[in-house]
Image 1 (tube, rainbow, N blue to C red):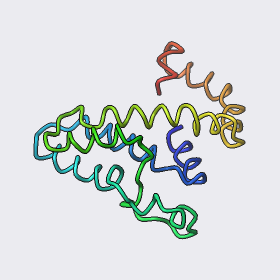
Image 2: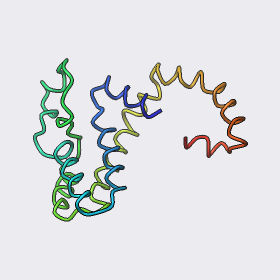
Image 3: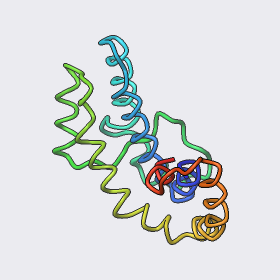
Image 4: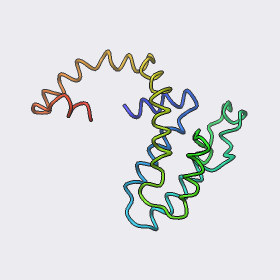
Length: 149
């Protein structure tokens, strides 16, 4: 599902949102100040810093793939500034507010389009057969357990 959603976002030129969300999940799982600081700087540079080239209209419609460092996410100024100000003392919650904003944006916008897309509809159409055989092989896993996979 994630790979399919990522591919869909790439077709919409908005894959920076899921890439940022995944980077935040990875960051939150890090232990140790040095690892957190290095990862925080990388996330900041790639997704949060002002004036990243991805923001420019010409870059957004380029036919050439954009480098990973040009994936600025669309954060409101309050969230962006709060994140920038917190960079001085990184902890596991550093990107939490920004990640929640981007998740809400995806849920409201791109994820809804994804659910209506032909590629997702094709997946759903094939899912009942696959889900039934998966449940049998799972040794009686509940629907809730199956849906988290």
